[in-house]
Image (cartoon, rainbow, N blue to C red):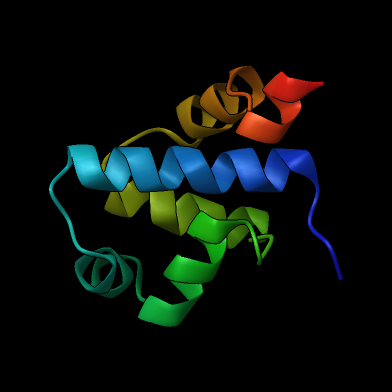
Length: 83
């Protein structure tokens, strides 16, 4: 199943915030009580996290979920920019 453009952008925002916080995928997963593989899949836009899981990721990043979602709405992927 393919994820939506918003899910892919959300993953990019999570990755950007994780790197800004100087966290590894493993550390973010530990803080969010998720598996590191799942974090990687979210970041690549392969998995679409539920609202509860997205909230756990946001809390682990010490960022409001609304900010992550807003950033995802405003971010454009390379393929979206080409259109």
